[in-house]
Length: 203
Ligand SMILES: [Zn+2]
Figure 1 (cartoon, rainbow, N blue to C red):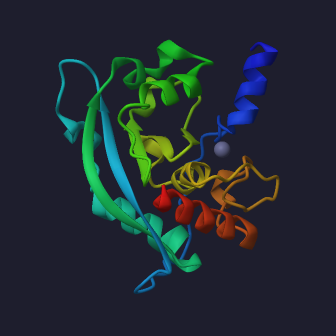
Figure 2: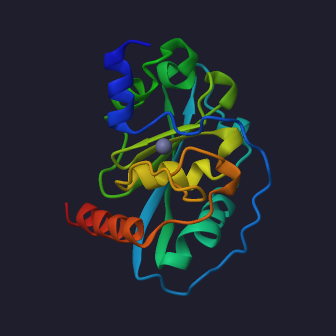
Figure 3: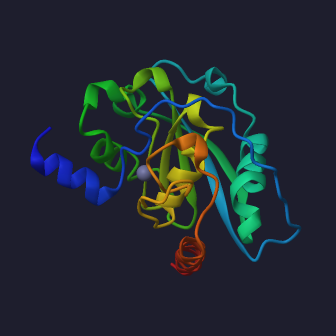
């Protein structure tokens, strides 16, 4: 990898999960009735040319958002509300193996016209179509590979989408080490996400 690419990756704060980790999460769900800060979350399935069947992803969107809220966001008075469920046809994005080392720039470029700036946009692709990548998050957008939707990759990338950077603190959702130990956001991170949400909705 060239230095400039490394710098770009660090700057964009991506390449997040370094290791595959399928240890089941052990987080007791917490739900609150009316979270103080809410934001819509759109689910966007990425499809290849010639296939408009999103059922290949086998995802229950309501259950996915419930899992995020119960496990990671409601306890901080942040609520994700399921917005639109959409599809985009995009071969560059669908098969990210063709864009090795340029995954982040490809992701941002190929989603430029489809993401909505007033919400979190979660793009889903097949894990099998990437190399050593669980997800990407930046600027209201998160890319999550299908095998990591119920792992800490999902709140981690949404954290990036809401303005957070990496931290070295073990157990923090935004750390890059031991993904199965990631359980919490810090007070500072929560405040930053809430401010980001408020600004996002004002735009
Ligand atoms: Zn990351």
